[in-house]
Image (cartoon, rainbow, N blue to C red):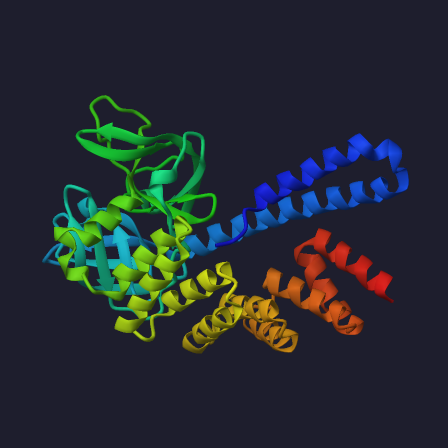
Length: 396
């Protein structure tokens, strides 16, 4: 799991305040420390905002418009769902399926997917897990833990209100556990409308913490935005309605996600390995293992699992980027450079790959190679470009 960058920024500022208290005794040294602390705090905050924007964009790619059709082929309803795996498993609200003979999923990229089967469904919980005929669907970052939500937490919803694909709205948690009509919901302020039903409600880390329910669920309710907690999804999978998903890789991958959110790394590793035992090509499980082995400081295993991810999906820039970071963790900088270069061949404007590759070049004394990257970095992030230009100048 990625570091809490806001917390890091706060720590940098605490250090800044501490430096001010003793500045009068060590003027020159503290002046330098102050500048570095401010630069660190600003850089961390900017990186946090960039990372959050990237996660939002990636999640948006995985949120699909669902259109249901009756037996005659006439459209019945339009709703939303989100893919949780790369092989076409999608989560949505059960009520979106009512009256449907078949369903079609459409992504903002323009891709269409045909419905294959219902993997699990629970009308009371208003959750359905669908399998589409696909092997290349984008997926949301991860499943979060809706039990840890607090009033005021920032969230964003992605859905298809009135057919407007990939619509993002932001807000906060009003009530983590709102009882409405004998059901427990998450109440939030991010706006949702008809057509958004079944979309994702995401936390600041880009993890799904709810399934939006764009329906009036209580008498005389206005602007009452509700979502089914994502932990209810786990109940559906492991309960009676989830018999079809028992011993499936999707089940164990989802359980691994939930264990990760509680920082139970060994439990998550066990779940991911069970998913892989059922499907040796289950890409998401290898990615989960890579992150967990990083947390356990078992860097050779981190590399092995990210390497498997790149073998399974050789066209994904993010996979090669994370492989590069794993190689760095083992001190294998040549292979890290190669991984970053590959990521940039796939996605030339991959900001993090550009940044980390430039830093590695500078660390190895390859100043000219780092300078070649500066125009692209400066164009994408002027602040980082200026920082690296300053490093190049000082090294020379």
